[in-house]
Image 1 (cartoon, one colour):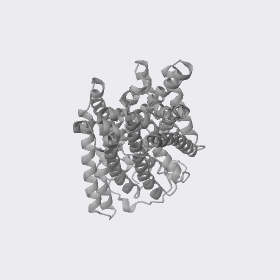
Image 2 (image 1 turned 135 degrees about the horizontal axis):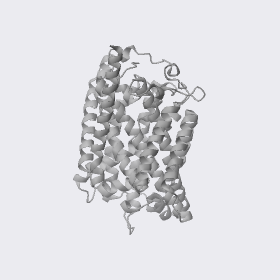
Image 3 (image 1 turned 90 degrees about the vertical axis):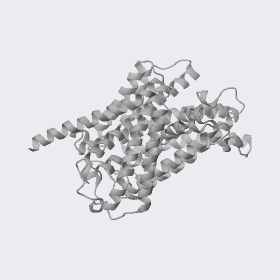
Image 4 (image 1 turned 30 degrees about the vertical axis):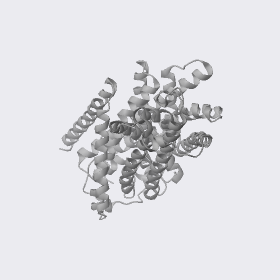
Length: 472
């Protein structure tokens, strides 16, 4: 692979698929199997979290079309997954989407992908750290009538994630796997028992999209897309997955399909379960807990709340792991100091990059926490910012894919069509996101993102000029 951002002289056809990631990056090659690789993508999405926090937000806009919005989001995610998986069959590296773009398109696009993807993972990690704070408060108030202070709670979440990510990537993946299996399992049990109680019949209001305003579907789609954010993060394990050119593409597509089915089940069941309730789904602080009570299994509701809190930690861990490997690849591409590329000889993990990743997540949430912003709002605001990073990276990968396949002698008209459609969908999502800003805080997010990207591009220009002066 190229070691400089945007180098295009070397094609994918000439790259060695079996090159040792350990030789290149100091990571432990081949330590993660298919299930552990899949766990990285699943944990980065934190599916049980979306069932509790994101679906009510989507319902507030889409109403009876909530399940349909998730169907649309699943389709859009599968389009992105198609593009990512085709790239993942050609190349494997810790840089994931950044590497795919940088090695195919001119330097500007590689730099844009790098900073966008980094913000996406850091923003998602900060978002779910806020979610962890939200659930820590919810559970503490429920059992102890006391809310823990924000800063110590956020510090514990971020530092614990950093420690596990540094200690062992295999341990990290296995821990994330079991957390998500238990958390999602509890949700599925509650929904299954609730549906059994209501009887196996169709909720015609939902299937007819009764009372739905078409204009609300766009903004709702933006929120639903955040539920899938991070589904591609298995690509960051290109240096550590076993048989990465086979394992990673499968993990990406499997994650999109499984998550789509799970989110649609949750959306349909939650809307159905709140029929006849005095409170709206959009107003519930813990919708699955209420549904567990209606299903006659209230203790599982507590378990789901606890599982969601732990799932938030797993997502912080997954985002720390992914962001650290993007930082490694950026350092390899001379976008950042070389110190971020170094790995621990004992653990085979990028210690400095992990500390920086977790540190930024804590700093972002700590600033908001000190300003009195609630955990649920941190989850909302930082997640909205992360969407811009993900959508930009997804669009750039879709643009780059046809060029990479042509360079490798694998041109396909189908790939070109899907790539063009994917770019169009990503542009629409960005437009919906900008137009759906409901308050001054969300209205500022696009400008914050543009300022961040401008700073990243400026940093790249400065470093490139210094390198040219030294070389000259």
